[in-house]
Image (tube, rainbow, N blue to C red; front, side):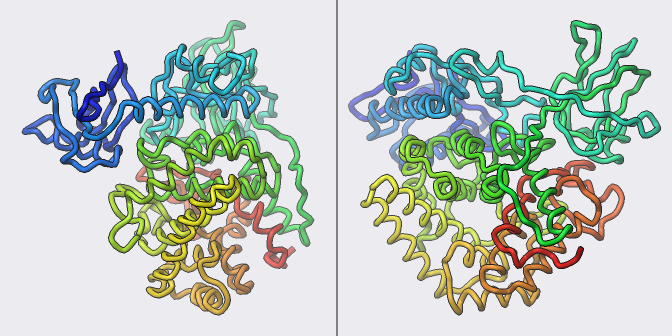
Amino acid sequence: MSWFTETQEGVIVNVKAQPRSSKSGVDGLLGDALKVRIHSAPVDGKANKEIIDVLAEHFSLSKSQIEFKGGETSKTKRLLLRGKKGSEMSKLFASIAVALVATVANAGGWCYKVGECEAWQLKLTVDESKAALCKVGWPGRFVYPTVEPKCFYSESPVEGYDFIPGSNDVPPHRCVRPVHEVAVSAIGDGIYDLKREEIGYVVCGANEHPKLFVGESLEEVKNNDWNGFEQITLMDKTPDGKWRSKYPLALRYFRFDCKTRDVRFLSEVDRREPSVTYQAPNRRAAGIWRTAVETLRLCTRTFLLDGPKRDRLPWMGDFVVSCLANAYSFNDPEPCRRSLAAVGTPAWLGHVNGIGSYSLWWVVGHDLVQQKFPDARFLSLHYPRIKERVEAFDNYLDKRGYYAKNLQWNFLDWTDSKGGELKSETTLQVVYFAALKSAVNLARAVKDEASAAKWDQKAEALRAKLVAAGMDGTRHSRALAIVFDLVSGETAKKYAAEIAADDLPPTVTPYMSTMEVWALMKAGETKAAKRKFESVWGAMYDEGVNAFWEGFESAQKGNDRYEFYARPYGKSLCHAWSAGPAFLLPMFPALAAERN
């Protein structure tokens, strides 16, 4: 049975609602019905009203075009989408299958969400997968996923699930990442030290089932309160009688609650040398660059991840920094391409990563990958999804033409070390401008001149409005306006001078600090750029870190420096958006600190 029925009036869709959800939106297919998450409880018709609101937004319809045709009081409901055609529904799902399988073919057999499991949150049967394979001329082989779809709806797959590339012959769930043994040092109080952060498996012998404690810091590994645990540290017994952590864990330190023997650590971290070298002018610059590269290394697996501990997923809020850091170190395009493909859901499903601003960064990311790793075939495969996304931006424009309507959640920067979020409409519009200009570049690359002209006209109209209105009271809007060439010449110098004066609220995340340093160097404010660079990465380097943290304030001491999101050890001590020096130092040689 299909999830929709075509009629003369339009399309009737089956809907299964999930009330009291933390966020609302269409959540793919569940059997023969569209799954819709809603905040409301099924009381006094509130849930039904919200279902109409959600469908109207996702299918670009007015509320008056949606009508209940049955099931108002049951779990499965039937709603008419007036004016829609069945071919639109079928084409939507078919395009996902073709794009998915085309990605497999392009990546030499790598795949995710195919077969009897969720595909970009959409059900594809084995037969549908095979049909899609035939459409793109692939020889009929396909592989299966290793990760549950829920990982796309939470902050991170805390269970340690991971995506692993398969091949034409071996599906991912049969693949195993290569591991190598790392030296383990006992440092007292039953604590073991790996000397630097690693990702992998703790192994030991024990006469009883050991309980494992892990940490990126000594303070974290000593914690006994389960409210402070950031990873699941279950231990399984192996066929040879040893105990091994069930999931790959990100840690530097670990300990047990019982007597153990033959303690080992098997690391999955790829320790190859960067393929691009940086000729540092002094030891300090070389050390900061190596630490940034180590940060990126730990955040690079199948995808470019936020972090190895808490954020083991690709998020577009980090992508510009991690992609550029990759280009100036390992120069490996595959994690970049996989990341863009993995989060590139259909526009009707909502925003990339569920965040309005991240949809913009996703388009910017595609343009950046084409600049650093040109691949006409990859772009041609993904351009239909890119075009769909850019066209969908219109659904979020207000009367001024600003990307500001029905966005639900945006993330630009923190306002403090506890996770307060920056609200800056102007900064968001600058990112929108960057996304439009990126879309123009991508359209021209595939010779879609009509779209390129249309989007360029929108970008220039937005530029005129933003320049006329001036920037708001943030350094973020000014920095991004310089980085993405919204302004140039004397205006860029003026904005850079305003940033350098330090009268504006600071950038807080190392991601936005990277943008600030980039803008200052680009506009010739070298002294201010060095000052900012030293206050972020120089300060961390002087603390002796092995990887750059998600956020850092040198004034914080003790356990306070590890707290985030009201979680005592929530802060990641290795985070991709902090890898900026990997490209900033080679890109701007004058930035290198003069201290030895």
